Image 1: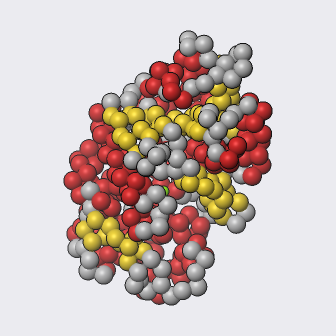
Image 2: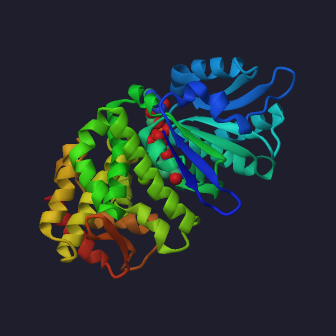
Image 3: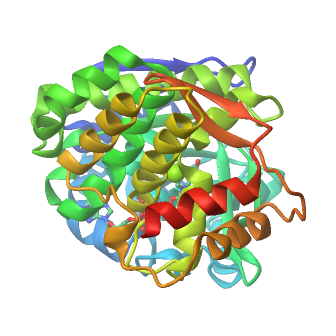
Length: 371
Ligand code: NAD
Ligand code: MG
């Protein structure tokens, strides 16, 4: 078991990691559980997968404590992060009688967490919520840090708020049912923490990544706890990404978003897969600038390839050129500029924000990688 505090003044909360936590939810989340009405109903939001897989055990545990889980269930996938679903969810919470002192429970991956977090940021001008993340990505990344959002026609995560949860309960056992491809996509974000800020953790992942992906309990808990500890530290230092600190968490994401845009944000390339490849590109581009050695860049690429994540741009079979990918980056940042801030590596385990990167040079570099 690990407990990691997120030290935000006045809004501290704990991230608890323990096997079987979901089955002991009523005990683990006791201070945040209040039943509404005579039936003592508690609001839960899930998608059809997480409700089907874990809804019953959660409900049984609550029932043993005299509480009744009440469900708002969405379809799996990004379509749940829309105005329409948000409106229905907020109406449902109001109908339940949720007040600012109450807590809503989000049982699912990043989609459910982002949707619930935003609904709770605006319902009654802000009610509480508890994250019960069920994907590796949500367990190491999206459930902690308070970024909440929905998507609109103009793009992903453009409407949202910073709203921190009151508690995050991570039960690694639920990853047993997560499809392997989703597991690997979440693992890309784990590798990211090693590459951006912890060389020893990166080396540990090189040696133990297979165990993490195989859901070995000890390795998995260490990987999740180390990832969350770093995210918690960074969020506490720079909650709203006003300095470069929180931006470090975007390692691999500028290249990655361009790849997601080029592949139409489709199943062809999951976010984590795009980030994995983005990190390879960031490492190779850092080597091109002589900031790390070619050997180190290839070491990063090998760690990514070894976990079954995409590590080469040419293997993706894209038909675009480097300039097209750079256009996506410019569009992403709504910038016409010739330069963009890029997350690059000074060493394996040390990322920094470079502000002198020439986009024409990025396009030329990408042409080489696409060939
Ligand atoms: P997701 O929530 O769509 O879940 C992926 C799939 O796995 C879904 O089909 C889901 O039903 C299924 N699933 C979830 N848990 C399962 C389990 N235990 N067993 C079997 N199937 C399970 O995807 P995700 O990768 O968790 O999250 C992606 C979202 O997170 C994106 O919308 C992204 O914008 C957001 N995100 C937010 C932050 C943040 O800081 N708020 C950070 C990163 C990503
Ligand atoms: Mg990410």
